[in-house]
Image 1: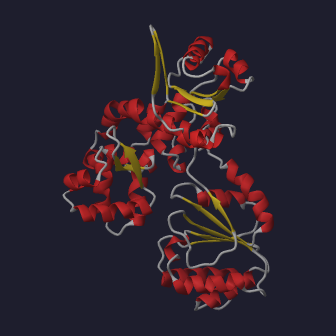
Image 2: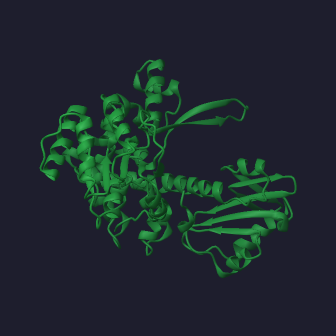
Length: 445
């Protein structure tokens, strides 16, 4: 199975015609290198990766590569190297500098690169600068297009695996977090549990990727791993993290800021029933949340044996029950942020978040994932979690009855989400404009 970043491919086409310099950014594991090398596989290009290199070694290895390409003397300085690049540009018009994170803070390198970019006499090329989204090239003054390559979405996975059920797609997305190498570890047509069993070997991307990311961001990753494990197991405030880890509160706060800067953790404002607002800390990506909850504390079991049986019999059922549905709900509301009708008042559009609302009258009740009114418009959101049958006429009748108890049906905007296709009755109802239908292949955010 291979995921294709089709949206970014469409973005790239006009950009390649206009830009001399292009930044491609995204989180680690989003497939930036694979995407670019696929893009230019049939065009002459020069590729160099700065991954894991300090400035001295990067200068030496890049200079050595250019020496072999041009059969020239070894360049000694960055200015010499960019002069050699300009010479190579006589025959090669595409240059890819990958993993620039390593040199993003080097003033010497960035100054020489900036001079090369700004030189009006240099040969025209397309220069691709590739780095993660958490390490900006602040030392450069770039007048270029910036293309973002995020992790795979639910819709991406569905497009690559059209025969999978909606539930299977959601399980793949939750377990992988959209990380390309992990998504591609699922074999086409194979039951999810069988793919997971294969993925539980010691050198698999599923077991090793989180450690690689942590080591790339921090000199002492074990300190941060402890906090991530604490957050993954439900300790979401500074005080709880301090008690769990034994770290002083000020140290927890410092580590949390670093984890947020690395894109691993986010601070979420929550309002208690009393009205007081509190900040909770959550792991942003489902893969990392699962890894630090189930893999991190069981590394001894992985080394000695038995982890695959534990994961399949204990962890996977818990993930299916809680994490998959949590990710599904989150994806539905992320999609809504982009799809709520413009006629809905702005105050109501911004208020659309997960908040259960139950309508009750006599022996009848129905629950929405959100319900709200502003001016003469009401918005209702309902997410159907059962994938065993299509959402059909019976659900539509109950829905219409529940809405009318709150607000006139014809003056409402109703957004429905399902893991599988809707019935013909609902598809016909959607043509009148009151109801909007979303299936798995529309969850692109």
